[in-house]
Length: 278
Ligand SMILES: C[S@@+](CC[C@H](N)C(=O)[O-])C[C@H]1O[C@@H](n2cnc3c(N)ncnc32)[C@H](O)[C@@H]1O
Image (tube, rainbow, N blue to C red):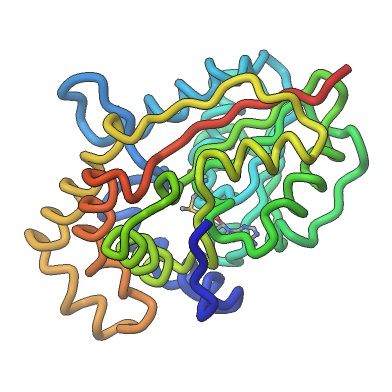
């Protein structure tokens, strides 16, 4: 695991309050990577990632789902709309909570979703109240990941599944340049740490979950950053960002770093599915 001790929770919250609009303009309603198999558009690729996780995790019609780090509600609304799931979305950002609620209403899924503004590391749910605990690209922002997975496991019914997608540090040992790249990504995207694939498998197993799948999608997702980098340049986003909040938008300058990190395997992108034993 590689850590960046300067990251603070209040800064993560501010980041998503300020930058959600940028993510929406640059990328779309999902704040996660696209998953490519050919020349799909970025919008299709982002949707493909959601659908692939649904298939890998075996999400069933009508499942009760908790979506940790729900962003603008992209996954939650998709699960409610296309899989008839009842979804509770959790976000640290009050701005995102309002956005997701409005978006769900506009998509006709209001009755099947609820969005709450809570810290995933503190939020309480009744034990065994969900069939699926879903989290796409949020656990990077958590400070005590092993403790979070233990709590998440408690929310699941026996037989329930955890589905996680996460940015990962590359396998140890990394050389000096590799470690610096991962650190720069942590700093630029406000991640207190990035775990390795082995770390995640260990944390999920220690939480009493049985690992079912570990998938490495690095090569299928990395194009995301070429597209974002080119869009930032083409749309002259930087001058606008500087006017709004220069410190919060440091991530705009780290797109090439993350791309280099994926290309050199200093970072990987993983999907994990684990089951709570019956
Ligand atoms: C990269 S975005 C991913 C959003 C969404 N999962 C998606 O795929 O579109 C990260 C999300 O994690 C949320 N987040 C970060 N730290 C959190 C915390 N401690 N508790 C709850 N949500 C958190 C942010 O508010 C944001 O919604």
